[in-house]
Length: 183
Image (cartoon, rainbow, N blue to C red; front, top):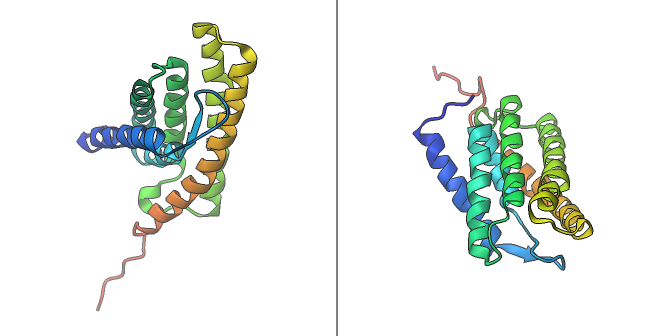
């Protein structure tokens, strides 16, 4: 597990705050009730890769909770659980791709995107709709439509914005062996 130090706790707070701000104030409404599209998942995905699965899980959980609380429709724990799972899953990608060492190329982009697609499909195709049906007795058709639209939007935004963020962050890190001693 990545070091759970003060830096990680601060990152959780920043990640949750970014999730809240991006999902609450910088979101695109959809024709599907109570569903908006935003760029908070790419940000959480990248931060989870940097700080680990537990930090990613907490960023998603706290950020989504705060966003729902401010939305006026109440906290939907089923969707909070989906965000927590997404952060958790993306945190494990950080064990395979170490962005802090500048490791992100084509192979990293493929791994990042395969995992984010799977994580979004599980979050919004299984966890959130399944819990909505079990907890809130929501209509199956409505819930799976929300999950499908949410999955596609989140997958696309994470693929584009998340991949750009990974390349940008990795390019700021010194790569192993890139520093030479001057004569």
